[in-house]
Image (cartoon, rainbow, N blue to C red; front, side, top):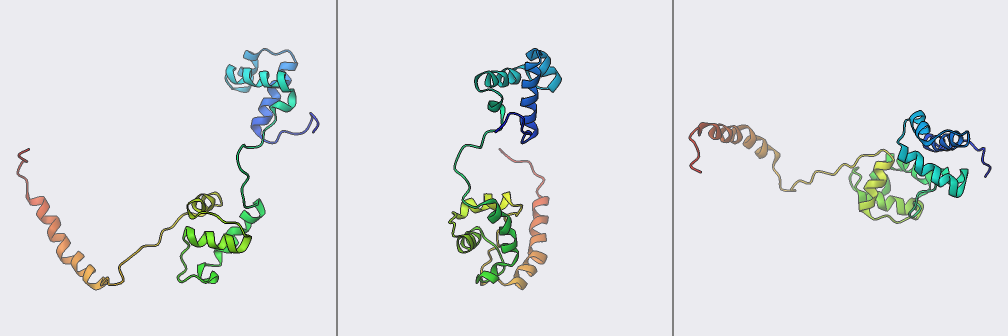
Length: 167
C-alpha cells in the first residue's frame, strides 16, 4: 500500500489531513481548530502517526469475528424472502426468525440462531413482525358483541366513582 492512496472514508481523510498539516509545521492547536476537532483527538492521531507513520492513520479492519454470510449472500437474502414463506414449504406466509434461519441454512449452508437472525434482518432493512397468536376456539362474533355491549358499560362505571380514596 502506498502512502498516496485515497482515503477510505471521511474520518480517515481527516486524520490524514491532520498528519499533512503537522508535517507542514502546524501546531496541534491550529490543526484542531482547522479541522473542527478536539486537541485531544489531534494529539492521539499525531502520536499514532509518529509511531507507525502515515499508514497508522488508515482505517483498521473491525475487530471480531467475520460475518458468516458474505456481502453477496446478504444482498441476495431480500430476494429470497420476497418469494414468501410458503415458497419454502412453510404453512402461512409469515416470516419468523426461525423460518428465516431455516431458509438461510438451506440456501447458503450457514447456520444462524433465530435470535441473531433479527439483527441480520435489521441490517438488510427488514423489520421484525411477530404473528398474532389467537386461540383456535376464539369466537370473533362473541368478542365483537362483548366489546360493543359490555366494555362501554364497564368504562362508564369507572367514571361514576368520584369519592376520594381513604388511603
